[in-house]
Image (cartoon, rainbow, N blue to C red; front, side):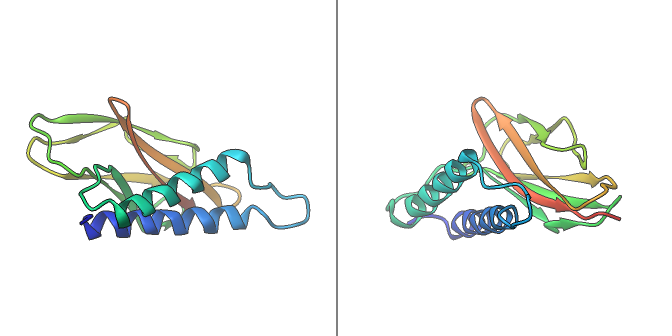
Length: 151
């Protein structure tokens, strides 16, 4: 059976992605859902289905954030979780899709641990800004969406 923590994290990411995509669908000349948005949602759905019906533990890396909506010039805590504790420390590169989220360049998951936490600092955008923060290690990627509120 899949780990409930992983299932809940993927479900939360799927919900956030749907809310973000829906927010971009408004009328009045705003941005529209892109082909990449649809592809990302399909992948998230496939991940949830795999977790619910695989019969075994899914090796999945999860990145979560609290709070998901970040006030200007404050910090949010990100948690990078891996399904299996590494035997040697893993240095993950960290990226942000926007200057509104200032992330460290890398974080380390210590040997024998299944997670690490790090802070991302919000800038002061002129309007609410969605940011994707991602962590990458040897072809594995975990990402999450957050929203930096304007001040």
